[in-house]
Image (tube, rainbow, N blue to C red):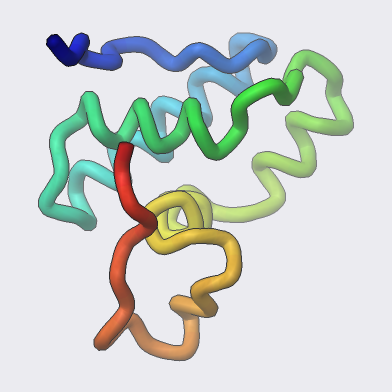
Length: 93
């Protein structure tokens, strides 16, 4: 039995977690996947990291939500900014 991933499970400040929720919302708009899958992908991408400190929050927010959404979806080495045609998403789960 599979359980739905409904919440962001990353350690972080309220500002960081709110921004991560914006990233999830962006993924829902951009890709044909459920919110649960978006949250699961985000949790996997940043597993074990801590976004409590100001420096980590600033690094997170240095990129727009679309950047993070596409990087999480396609993978960190996909170079999606060169064009998304023919790109496959990272396997999930």
